[in-house]
Length: 244
Image 1: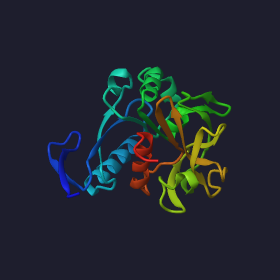
Image 2: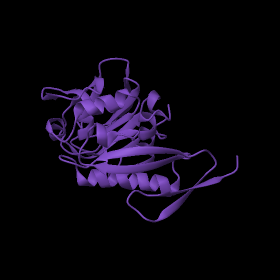
Image 3: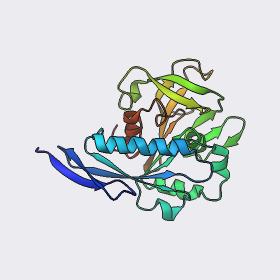
C-alpha cells in the first residue's frame, strides 16, 4: 500500500503537522484528567509522550488526539476512547466531587478504556490494602501502598511482550502501588524485578476487562524521566482494544 499523509493539528495548537503512514490512520481520542489531586508533571509528561508519538509516528496507524479536563462526568467523557488518570493523590481522586465514579464505570463498561498511572492505578483498583476501597474498575486487582521515590526495574511477563519489547526497563516510581491479582481474569503485564519498592515480583503493570472495556494500571511512571513513550503508547492501544 502506498504511503498517505494525514494532516492534523495538536490540541490547542493552530499549526498543523503531517503524519506519514502506509496504513489507514486511526484517531484515538484521549481525555487526561488535570483537576483536583492530579500532578502537573504527570499530566505534562503524558502530553509530551503523545506529542512525540504523533510527530515521530511511533505507533504506525494511530494518531492521539488529546484534551484535558478538570471535571470527569458523562458529559466530559463523551466522544473519547480512553480516560487517563495521571499521578497525583488517589485519596483525593476518590473523594473528589469533580470526579463522577459512576460515569467512569459506565464509560468503560460501554467499550472504552481507562489508564491509571500511580494515583490513577490506586483509584482504579479494587482496594488499597488496609486503607480504602478503589473504584473497582479492575475488580480483581488489589494494590499495596508503597513509599518509595526513585528508579525501579520492571520486566515483562509472557503476557506483557506486546507492551515492553525489552527484557527489562527502568521507570520512575513515586510512591505508586505494587499490585497483585485475585483472579485469572486480571493480567499481569510486568513485574518489579528489583527490591526498591520492597515488593520484588509483584505486578507493576496490570490489566483487566470491565464490561466491554479495558482497564490498565501502572504503578510506575512511563511519562516521567526516564520517559518511555513506546510503553505509554502500547498501554493506551491495549486499553482501547487496538493491540493484544
